[in-house]
Amino acid sequence: MTDTRVRFLDLRAQYAAVRTDIRRAVDAVFESQTFVLGPAVAAFEEALGRYLEAPHVIGVASGTDALYLALRACDIGPGDAVLTTPYSFAASATQIARTGARPYFGDIERDSFNLDVAGLRRWVAESCRCEGGRLRAPGGEVVRAIVPVHLFGRPCAITELAAFAADQGLDVVEDAAQAIGARVGGTGRYAGTLGRFGCFSFYPTKNLGGAGDGGCVVARSAADADRVRALARHGAEGGPYRHVALGIASRLDALQAAVLGVKLAHVDAWNAARRRQAERYDRLLDAALGSRASVAAPVRVPGHVFHQYVVRVPERDRVRAALAAAGIETQVYYPIPLHLQPCFAAFGHRPGDRPEAERAAAESLALPIYPELGDDAARAVVAALAAALGRRGA
Ligand SMILES: Cc1ncc(COP(=O)(O)O)c(C=O)c1O
Image (cartoon, rainbow, N blue to C red; front, side, top):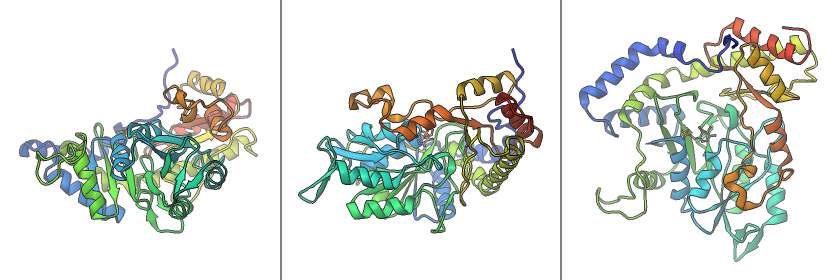
């Protein structure tokens, strides 16, 4: 068995840097014996709202629930359609289906891995019809919203999408699970704060990660925020035991809020470190592979927070196996595009339906990236990649 020389992600160095503060914050929660919601959650929601320059933040149990609750708060359900990307973590689309609505998939742009807005506009123009002032999808559902994803920490074309959505009378629910702290070019605002709702995940591996599951919804209006809060608390309104909607139990734990509150103060510095890591990879790849004919490095845009550094390589699975044999851990995000996932088989998609997403699924390889990744480790990754591709090492 090969020894692992470079782990895909190692959170231990991060923890060492914040251990004292986290232990103090966690102890305070234990002393209070308030574990669900309460002052620790309220304080974190407020701090995150200040950070994101967003008026309303609602802590929930996961990024998955954040998406579901935001869609429900838009009154999306059976008979509705929601447009999204075919290239993301499953939750971006499964939560649309969980409301009873049907997800429809656009395709992605090759460079950004994000939803191709021009393509989506074309698809709507060619495949949807306007009936009684409502936009109908090919299956007859009423098109209600778009769920764009800021994949890998790179802001998507949210301004163009929001303009398109406004033209069509659609809501925008941003999936910003991977993009906390990413500023959207030309707006000065953070990803996740431009749609009607923004959804974040605090899964431990995220740029702002808790010590377990967690997430939040960002809302622009007080009424929308109240609706999400009610839905997250069993649909109760006007008192705890009066249920006006079929809600769920989805709350941020006080312990998670305590951990996240400590880490929030570091997120900009960690994101800046990720950007430097990405620049270093760019330089090393350039030096090792010259024209990069065989490896496409991510195309950088301002605001990118590099949740992942994803390259495209030919013969990805062979290259990945060679890296593993050299002790370098990598990941594939994502091997199966959403339109071809078995859980969506009923939609009848076939290989070839979303060619760019399928190409990305075949070529993408995520290299280790985290704020504390050392220079030697990055060099080892690029050397192994160059060797696997049969070129000279870095
Ligand atoms: C793009 C995207 N959307 C949604 C989620 C769901 O978040 P969670 O794992 O907190 O439920 C994730 C994270 O895993 C994600 O990466």
